Length: 166
Image (cartoon, rainbow, N blue to C red; front, side, top):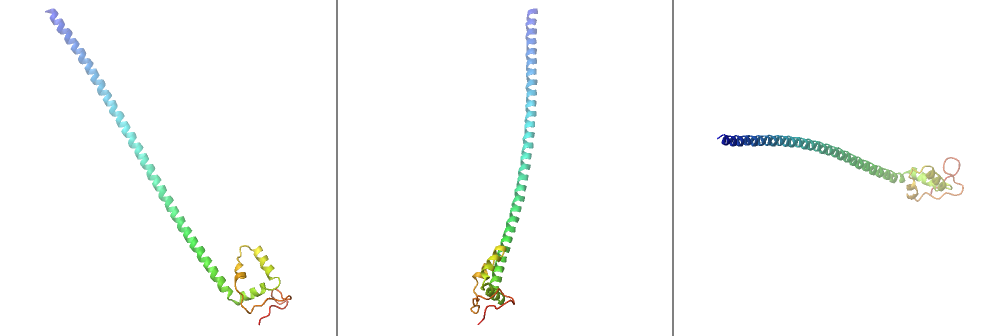
């Protein structure tokens, strides 16, 4: 019987040994599962942090784009205003030039420019002041009573005779 008990005792020891192995394996498995869960939580936290950073970057980029778009709209409006102002200025200058042609002052100036040396004077004025657009003086009609000057006529003033009027 002693052998029978020894066999049972050895079998029980072996069972305890196997149970210990299984317990350690279960503990190791549980520890691995806990580590895997912690790693998954860390990865989730890192992913959430990266997502929040990406979202912040997108919001900042959207805000920058909105500011840039607003600046472009302002610049476009400024350009439109400047263009409209320039067009209005050009129309005003053209209207002034058209109105000036009908004045006695223009007729006097045209008469003086038609005198001997007037063309050269006009050229010198235009060379000295290229920013002045005096081309309309050449292109504008002169009234019929303005005659070409004779050889003794001057550019005006009291020095001598001027162009004759009919």
